[in-house]
Amino acid sequence: MKLTIQHLSKQYRRDFWGLRDFDLELGPGVIGLLGPNGAGKSTLMRMLATITRPTQGSILWNGADSIKSPDAIRTVLGYLPQDFGVYPNLTAVEFLEYLAAIKGLDAKSSRRRIDELLQVVNLVDAVKRPLGSYSGGMKQRVGIAQALLNDPQLLIVDEPTVGLDPEERLRFRNLLSDLSGQRIVLFSTHIVSDVEAIATEIVIIHKGRKLQHRTPEQLLQTLEGKVWQWIVASETLPNLKQKHIISGTIRRENGIQVRVVSETIPAPDAESVPPSLEDVYLHEVAQGAVPK
Image 1 (cartoon, rainbow, N blue to C red):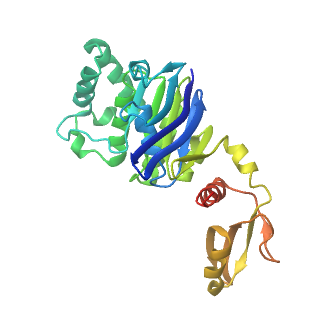
Image 2: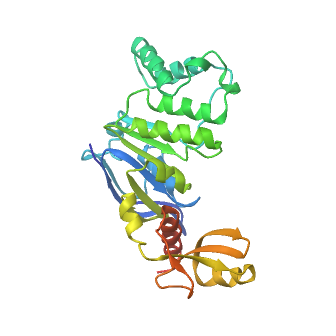
Image 3: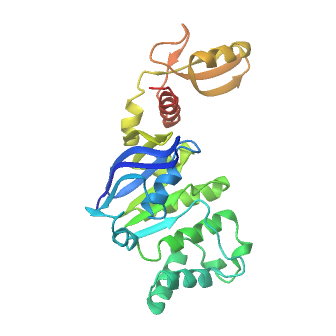
């Protein structure tokens, strides 16, 4: 099972590329696509889901060209878009039966599959309620259920935790982790903690370009010995922000504790601390924003 992306680009206007010369090769696991809003994450996912056609490049599923023959990937694809909507007057069962029919699934086997999925996403107790009464997290779980109707080998989930409260976010992250198994789960987010919790690989994207593709451990190693922490006076903070990447601040009784990413020690009293993925992310995005 392999998804290969080669030189993929999407041009929206003459002077604007949503994605540019993007290369990626993925196997089974949970892959977090991490980047700021507008980085190109949704553009990439829509092209992988065969909704948007690339301007240039190729997408190969097990060697088959999914741009020329999209059915090769559509039959194994599950997709939860960022703007997933539901019919508020339908129950979860009615909604999933409707989508199963659209996907051409057999009625008898799809009902059995729906019952299984409602167990998986923990919605059995709410199946008789209209979807309009569901919380945001519950609607997202319905979205995952519809994406899993055909037991996909490739599951694409776009910004799944936006707008969810902390408890629902934790439940949804655990659900994605449990679903990985022998499939490729690709989910996009700008929330570092979501990626940190479940991703086996992380792809950092900014301004339509891939900045990094490594395991979380490998990414942390890139900043080993380059993250510093010390106390500064609050009035010096604006000037410090002009000179360094500040990845965190905590107000203390004697000033502000700052966390800085720097190749060299930024102040005489700065102490080296272990890097976090938040440090790595902010560093990569800052570096990616520098004109080449």
